[in-house]
Length: 565
Image (tube, rainbow, N blue to C red; front, side, top):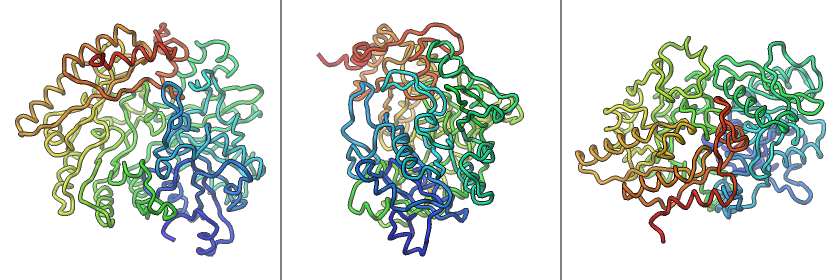
């Protein structure tokens, strides 16, 4: 009974006659703080609610997986899992993937395309009067009109097609708990206006009285369909608001209804984040998966996430849009407690695979004067230049690295998540390179053309070359033979064949032969995707060259393989 229940037998053993909240997720159930269903389930459990999880339900046939717990007392919660289901299923060339890292044995086919929509429709068919709350990356990034690469068209808010009653965007612990509290305390019905005032949620309404005064009215879905410039402007307004600490409600008409996106909660405190990580996770898959390998779990099993959020603002990335731009860090004590728990697991070998975060070297960084941050709407604190108000203090991070190094039960503590080489000082670089690299340090310059890098909101190529020189020098001084592995993207908006030829020349000059590279995949609600669909930079309103066809994308990708005949 250490895990959240996944069957009626498990709820019977607990003596439950009903469940308050039933989670449906497209991932296998892994009781680890890197997986959303486990985190939200544990948070709600700690708040006194009875929570059950249905991982990867069978959506065919008689829907027995959707019926196993019956009608919950409060609501159903639905998530596609840790990834958008379409990104999970298809390559940049729209070819079906043959595996799924979040499924036992990596087998594909355990979740449907547009997973959130499919699960919701089944639940609404079976239990039309029970509230359905959707969340996770798939719902979060599809909360407004968005471009869907796999259908090659604009789609309305996922609220329209899913028929869900409420959408939670971003990290959902506070919203999910408040929704449960309101339903329990007020015995609310689905359409209650009280639920429609929960922060960090979105809902669909035909009642104009629910549109708050002062809300930002976006161009309607129908206007965005007619005019790509309207869609580009919608994205600009949405991104500006999402980067603020104090946000304004967004409203978008779709047909005869309105999508209302409420402002988010303020950034969590360290104490709030610590409380989430201190919950009784088992740091393992549910026993139902005994003797089955789950690739995503194997990858993060010995990792420790030290913070949330990212102020890098990369054009193609959804981290800041989902987790927030402000960094919310765990305390050193909380991080050390997790490492101690990991060391007590039966198969512990003394190696932490990743002591990091979304951008590993942003731990504890924030504005020197937070009152200035409260007025700021910049997407990136690093581009086009590092903000003068950013506190670049590596002291707390270096203290953790060195303290972990001293633990008798830790042989190695590596940094496996991405680092920003434009956010670095010599002391940090030396500690990182000499003590926390497993032999290969992965970084993401993404390109070498300054024009393309500007579109990506990434630092200049000269910045990467300086770091490469520093990496090689420190390795030589320390007597180490480690590799620097750069990641690149082809066919990003703004990237031409000439730009790819320049990148091929640069990689050839460095004697670097990339074996696996990334072709740009448009994912919902990013600046890069908006430029891919519209051919317009939403901020400058200038036209942007886009390699849109499969042939153009393939040609750009082939430049990486200059060493093949």
